[in-house]
Length: 280
Image 1 (cartoon, rainbow, N blue to C red):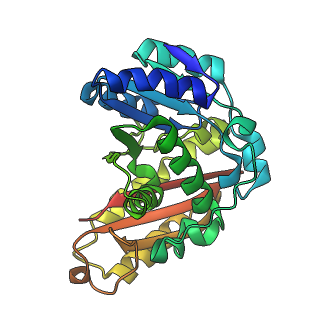
Image 2: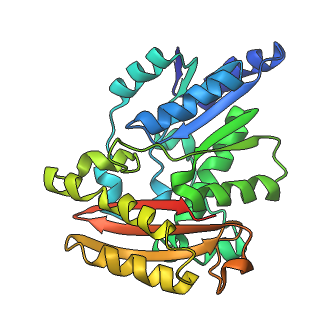
């Protein structure tokens, strides 16, 4: 595996891959790699001639300074994991390499900019869009892989690609879970032992809710789910929403949407967890 800290070095290496007619799979990450990341990488390796992984903790997508400061940074461990999985290129720039000058781009993602994560984390998706667009321009991947745990982020990135007519194909990948159902996340390592025992209740509740679709209306099901989660003393809920799966807008009746997803975001102690389950 070759590791690059500079944009110039990575571009030179990848230009040789493109000249040879090779396809490039790309998995952008913020490091602290777990099995969820590795599933994206395995798929990218199966479907492409080479794999590029970026590790960059993007400061402009954090609206919580403490969360940025505490985000795990374990580049040496991550590099070993990438070597073992067969990654060919690691891009691990520092902030000055990515942002030599202040970035002032402002993106409008319409309705996606008004709900759930966008409402609770102002500026978050603008920061995501800035860094993802820049990474796509640097790597010029054939395909890029994103997990559905961050479903709204995935929708934003898909819209970003359409807005700028980028040639990269976005590949959504299913949520990877621990054996007890907890959605894998780099933040999970910050949970205390007690909190880690409680965390699977999120997915357990979502699974129960999914089975009630034929009994409850969308609003009734949203309310039922919130009440179930509220009953767990250590959960501090940001939102529980049921939305259609395109612009992620709420709706009144099940037949108003061609696809529906139940979303939740909550704090467990000082750790913010998100999850979702497709209802249909």
